[in-house]
Image 1 (cartoon, rainbow, N blue to C red):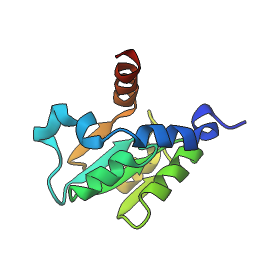
Image 2: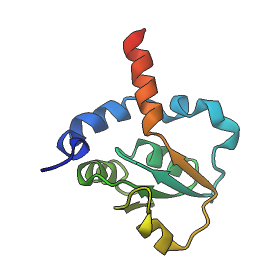
Image 3: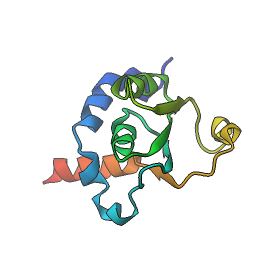
Length: 122
């Protein structure tokens, strides 16, 4: 039986992609990656942030445990230099195999939930 995220991947991807990454991440703008930065996007889901980070010039490694969401993300970032990994917290065994020291690690799922709650409340 597929998990919630796989079962509802197309609808979730559409919802997540309706938010602008620059707005979602505006509070930490001084720390946005510089061109060439190595970025790990944990729970990369729809690929929205992976695509945005790539547009900033970062080399992005997108981690997504849900098969359905990973498919959505791969489709959204098709043609971009984004490496997708089937991995999950707490182990991140596939990430550790890369033996890379990342310049930035982001995890946005809770930020999306807060943004949607704000939109739905007011």
